[in-house]
Image 1: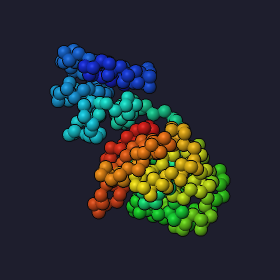
Image 2: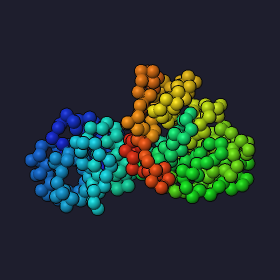
Image 3: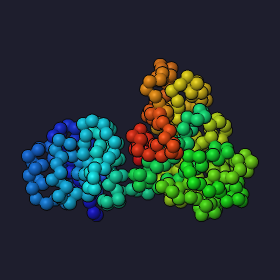
Amino acid sequence: MATIKIILADTDERYLMPLERKFIDELEDKVDLIVITDRDYLKQYFETPQKLDILIINEELYSSELEKHNIANIFILKEEETGINNLGDFDTNEIYKYTSVKEIYNEVINKSSSRTVPLNSTEDTKVFMIYSPIGGIGKTSVAAALCEAFAKYHKKVLFIGMDSLQTFGSVIEDLKAMEMGAEKLMIQRNEYVYEDMKSKILTRTFDIVPPFYLSLPALTIKGEDYINLMNYIKTSREYDYIIVDGASDFTEDISRLMAFANHTIIVAGQDMGSAYKLDCLLRNIDCSDTERFVFICNKYRSEKEDYLNSDHFMNLCTMTEYIEYLPERGEPERNRFLNNRSVQKLALRFI
């Protein structure tokens, strides 16, 4: 079996130990892992030409001389937080050194997967429900941005919008409407529904079930119809993730979809009105499973009061990410999320 050759280089041996263990536990016999903690030995090692798949190195040890070697991917461990940046033409990426071991591993593997031994297993398709009781909080933009982030890490993603009026075309631009008559395929719920619908799926950076021209109630399409479709999509294992953008009403369909999804991401707001609506939602769901229910705050402004940062809400739920408010610049809101660090971190939490 072909192996991936990886070097971890940092003078802090204690820091490298959990990272080393993570790579060994995950990759087992697929990795040839070398740990270097001595600066002089590192210099000596690279005095002869080397061929590596991945080099993870502290910024103090990094030198541009390393680029003369045959190294498919270099990751520089930065002491201060930074985005995932590509430096020049060479495949050199920056990672914040003190993020979690899981996040570092995920970033390295997914950024490197196209140039090393394929690592992805045939795991079951996971369904993400994106929900908010707050209209206008940017739920659909977050859902689309999460699709983009997953696709960036070489995942195959399908977006399904379930707002009653099918208005997600305002966020994901240039979408043609679903073919007339497709609603009949949905509501029949037969075993061929995915095969019949597959040709209608649109492909962008990620795949999209097109919006229906009329509202879902007008077409008598229910949440159960979407669940039936997703069950057959999951059976095909053609997608890594299905992202469902749910309506803002808390209906029986929404409750059923939350139970069906592997993860429900609830988008909150920091103002008093948004906090009140979140509080109403929390009275009606059991979110004690912190793997299934994840909370984020969108459109956050540090200069504004944060009503989520109170003893009441901190006892009920934890905000995993705060996504800062992004001012409009004459472009779709989804585009302003593309390189957002908080969205990237949210995606890496699940990869």
